[in-house]
Image (cartoon, rainbow, N blue to C red; front, side):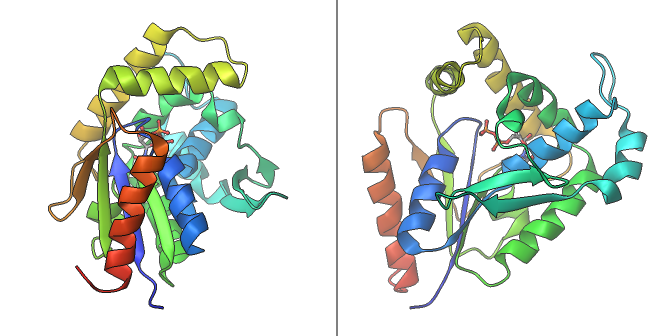
Length: 230
Ligand code: CDP
């Protein structure tokens, strides 16, 4: 059966990763969480003192880029996890602190260039589901299926808040809502590769959709594309 490229973009916490992972499992495709790569670079910058409350030392980060190795490795259950210079950072990159700094880091063109190069490599043989902000517009503009996911900011913040509480983080709902809104704004207005719906993307608002319905809708679209029906 022919393999295709599936690009899933959208606002923060819209459940892109969940549906992308489900699709990749079902189709036996590779799943790439491009956001995890931006988060790992952000964690590196935080740990190396390139970020303070008021300032990001962009030059230092750009100079350090050759020393930053980000890669996915599968855990025992077969789930891909993020490694930064050989260390498993899957949990660390999902913290609120990383979420606070990741969007400014993702505006830096040199960072994007490095990560997009890796993303191209991961998807060169097709059979890939990649989620992010610029996958259908910049990384894989020729993807056979492009999905653009949206939901209300309150619904998305609620989902992310429950996720963070479930993993034991102490956060306030208001703080999460503010982060989600700020990141959306910064991601959509940056000069390099802003978040926007590709002209040929299918928009899915999942504010009132359960995970199963959402998966079946997108799986059907993927099956149609694979079969060349649309
Ligand atoms: O999980 P969530 O939707 O909150 O975010 P994520 O997918 O982990 O992405 C974290 C951040 O990385 C985003 O807010 C963007 O600033 C950046 N990002 C990006 O610029 N381009 C991508 N392809 C993926 C993420």
